Every structure is written in structure tokens, then in C-alpha cells.
Amino acid sequence: MKKVYIVLEDGHVFEGERFGAEGEVIGEFVFTTGMGAYVETLTDPTYYGQIVMHTFPLIGNYGIMEEDFECDKSHLKAYVVREWCDAPSNFRCQYTLDEFLKKQGIVGVCGVDTREITRIIRDNGVMNAKITDDPSNVDFDEIKAYKITGAVEALSTKEAYTVKAENAKKSVALVDFGKTKSIIAELTKRGCDVTVVPHNTSAEEILALGADGIVLSNGPADPKENTAAVEEIKKLIGKAPMLGICLGHQLAALAMGGETVKLQYGHRGANQPVKSLENGKTYITSQNHGYEVKADSVPGGVQSFVNANDGTCEGMSYADKKLITTQFHPEACISPLNTHYVYDEFITMMGGND
Image 1 (cartoon, rainbow, N blue to C red):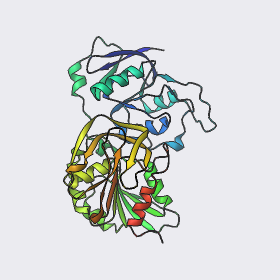
Image 2: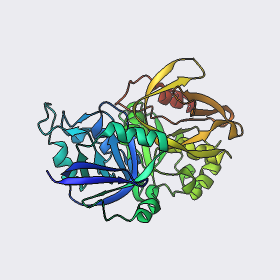
Image 3: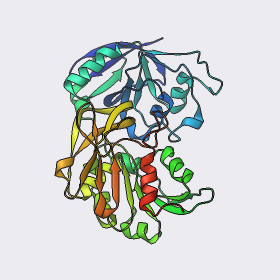
Image 4: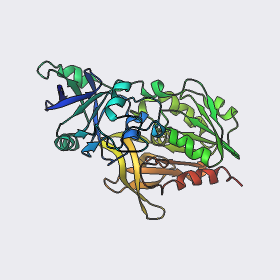
């Protein structure tokens, strides 16, 4: 295997080995703490423009299954692991991790000390990095200048379409900021026809659909970049029951007049503990984000969930607006399923399915 190097913008250099696609890339370097679910991680659109590293050491042991994809294409810049398995064992396996990365054009790096890199990121915060064959010839100004921009526009559907539910009793408009397939699955499972609309659809066009409820999807990057979407969400709030997930949670808070800030290293993985301030229970959730809502900055909002690790906001409720939002992914199948009730609460806000 060929040698390759990870060069962090602070000057740290790590030697590893190549797998996956060839090439040199620059991206925002982040880590995810999930012990599995690498297929969902690889195809999660929220990782757009990022170099993603797993803290769990062995990745690829059950292969790749396209049925588990969260979107049709990977949007990672590169993928970093301690060790990858070239002989997966799983009756559902269609091909190996290496084959997936080659098909998707994603650079892979293995054999690096992922534990040490994680400590650096935790201590110093998320930073950019370059994957290169020659660490002695890198432009640190170029690395530091990298910024993820235009992510939502790149990921969002270009045309509206509808996914029908069996025996549908409700209809939902899903505003696509970089959605995962699981959101649609949870809504159709609950008897909702789902019309997916582009991120730049006007409030008037969304309301003209006559949907019983509106969902603001997850998505990547800095929520403050989506100024036009925030203005349209302002017009939607209070007009129909609404649910915001991940980026949708952040955009709703901005639309209500709140603030968002970047976290030091974000929450990424299927093992993030979240406490409900309503019932006192702590749930293990799936998350992927680098920004947080400052709960006390949101007029008219009540914090509904808090992160049990760092105390950051994990959900908001706006009772008089029929709006609930969560920073975590209640639809995720890669963590315990006990937060799926958030979708049931949304159905109840729409009048139930009776």
C-alpha cells in the first residue's frame, strides 16, 4: 500500500497508507464516535466537504449495503480509519469498503493513530487538513483558507417530488436542505404523503401545497449561510405545524430571532446522550453537526432537550407556533429507536391520523 500523509492546519503530520480512490484533497477534518453505522456515515449528506475520521478502530467488517444508504452519493472529501477490513462477513454485503470508496471517488487513509488525532481536535477544535503524498510541499495558507460553502444548494433536490405512503391520511411538505432518506421513511411509515421541495422554495409555494405539516430537514455547514431560507421560514412559522431536524432546528431558531455558534468539535456519532427536560429521561441519539443553538437567545422558545455531555441545546419547543425542533436525528436507525416519538408528536400536532 502507498504511503500518504494527513497534514493538519496547525502543522501536525500523520503518516498512513492509501486505500479507496487516489488523489489529494483539502477539507474540514472532523471525527465521529459511532461504533458502527459507517455505511450511514459515508452516505450522510451532512458530511459534505469534510474529511471524516472514525474513533472506533476497525471499520468495514460487515461490508457495504446500498439499502442502508442515506443518500445516493457520498459527499465526503476523504475517509480516515485506524484499520479497514478487506474481508467483510455479512450475508447482506454487496462489496467492500475499499470498493465503495473507489466507486465514489473518495480518498481513503488507514494506519494512522486516530486516537491521537482525536485528542488534538478535541483540545484545539475542528480544523482543516490536507491529504497528500508530499507533506514537505504543502501550502498552509491554502489549507487554512478552505471553507465549506454552497453546501445546501449542492445537496438539495432541484425539483419537487412526492413519495406516497400506503393508506395515507396526512400530507407533509419536506424542505430539503440535505435530507436523509430516513426522514421520509419515518413520515411515510406514519401515513404521510411527503412532498420534497427544494431549499429555495418560497413560503407561498410551500403553503400552496396545502400540506398538513411542514418539516425542515437536516443539512450541512453553517446555518447562518442560509439567509434566504431563514426569511422564508419566518413566513411559515405559525401557518402550519412544523418539525425542524438538525440544520432545520438551527434555521428555525434563527428565524425566531435566535443565535447559533460553532462548537469546538461538534457532535458526530450514534452515541450522543440527550436529556429530555420534559420527562427527565436520557436518550442515546444519532447526531452530525458542528453548530449549536443558544437556547436563551431565542424569543418565545423553550428548551426541550439538553446534551448530557456538554450542556448544549438539543431541542426547542414553540407551543404557540406549533413548532418543535431537535438537534439530534429522531429518525436514525443507527442508534436506539426511543426518540422516534418526536415524529408521533408531530403527527399529533397535525391532528393525528384518526
